[in-house]
Amino acid sequence: MDETVAEFIKRTILKIPLNELTTILKAWDFLSENQLQTVNFRQRKESVVQHLIHLCEEKRASLNDAALLDIIYTQFHQHQKVWDVFQMSKGPGEDVDLFDMKQFKNSFKKILQRALKNVTVSFRETEENAVWIRIAWGTQYTKPNQYKPTYVVYYSQTPYAFKSSSTLRRNTPLLGQTFETHNSATPLQERSLGLDINMDSRITHENIVEKERVQRITQETFGDYPQPQLEFAQYKLETKFKSDLNGSILAEREEPLRCLIKFSSPHLLEALKSLAPAGIADAPLSPLLTCIPNKRKNYFKIRDK
Image (cartoon, rainbow, N blue to C red; front, side, top):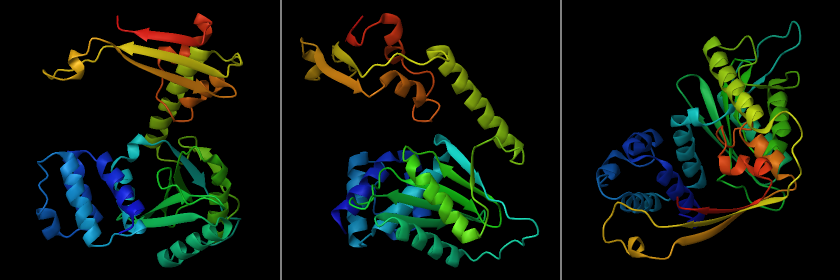
């Protein structure tokens, strides 16, 4: 098994809570029941991970096997992501296409790989007549980044596809063109989830409420005016080590722990203002970040109270 595949599987397993690990591994269906029975899931997670990686090496897990495990983990935690919805529409009088899943997956993959040399595409079908698509993007000169993928959920015979929000917004038009080519549909319209009156009312309500909450908090925090231009903010931390464990070496340390954190951007405050609406951070942001304009400084020293 390739080292990059082993590292990919290791990182994915480390993300999975121990109480979900057996369920997700069984859904993965890569390791047999007999192999899983050799694993002591009551030991430390690091030991569990090492044992599982060894089993994967024995079976020579591929990159696609690792990607499938990541898809299953994401399915279990799909509520933690922000999703955008695409609606496809046909012209008047056009019939619904007969759907062939095998043909869809082959053409979807070929279209993306033709447009972008370095990209990996993996699929997982579900019982709900949906296909989960995982896309790891590279560039013409770099390999696909397996740790910043885009997920797409497509329900066959429907006009909707759901895409996880991503910082790689430049690839959204390419996805749209891929669906358009396959479905012979009019150009995809990207909409924020919950703004389509034809969507399930429960989904609409949930997402509208959350988006309105984030928007309200962001406006209360930053106002609706342009932010002062600032290129960096620096935080110097000095704190004593705190732990419930007795006899720790660090607990006996008299000197505080020190570290320096620096945020930089061509327009830092506008960047901070956009984090929550983009789904990258929770709202409200930490007061340590939002207090910059009020305190009129961008150097901060944080000590124990």
